Image (cartoon, rainbow, N blue to C red):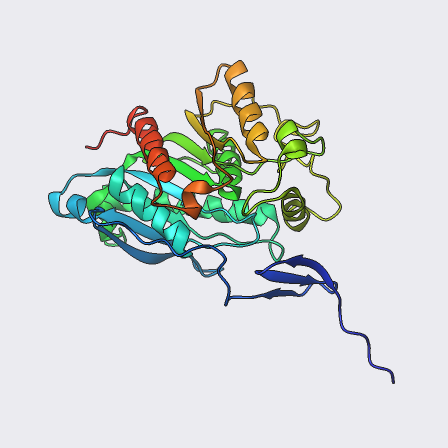
Length: 337
């Protein structure tokens, strides 16, 4: 009997993974294309530890808190953070995402909960959103346990976290997770939030999509880590098979997308990079929300490319993003108790 031919590579995501024609996914773990960040002297000291938030899938999140806060007894606002990576790569423990969350925790200051979520193509977008919902449920359970002084409360959080001031944030694909999670939260689809209060959302160079090209997509040359073919491939890997980029999970204002007019979104911050081919989608998102009368702020960084703050977490532009986020969170109910 003749042996069957081996499967072909249907999608190549160099240097991270191959999707084979039979559906098999091969991930390569011995590669890292970004320069490893090195913190300069004088950075605030930040402790961190990993905890399991979804035992069924073995999903973890990383808790960051400053040593000053943990020793002083002051409670800090909480940032639930979702990393980027086109929905198919990345993790909270990648060095650049880790360094970025260290900066946020130390310099805002804040308790940062950086979560991993299920990735495509093994898990399509809706499964990633379900993981984000499980993060919110875990945070709510921790807040309730801390309020009741129960033994199940994580001591780091019960000592340091102000659950009445929670912000949801993310970069690139994580920014898309933030939008959809925020809509589900305020629409009541994730159940009651008490005693958690969502004070705002921050989306940094968010990954949104659509079939019709924007001017920045059509005209901009590829950036150091992002090109239009890479963006198109990301949507092929994460959306339901056969979908176009006008699917509601990608195009938030497409013909089949739910209207946002009646959705009581919390204050929203968008950070865009002037040389990011996704810039126009972030600007359009902010303009549409503003036209609906929703609280939204757009800050654009000249001369920067997609995800610049994660590529160089300790660069000057990254420092300015920290200041922008700090102004946003402390201007929207972020004062510590």
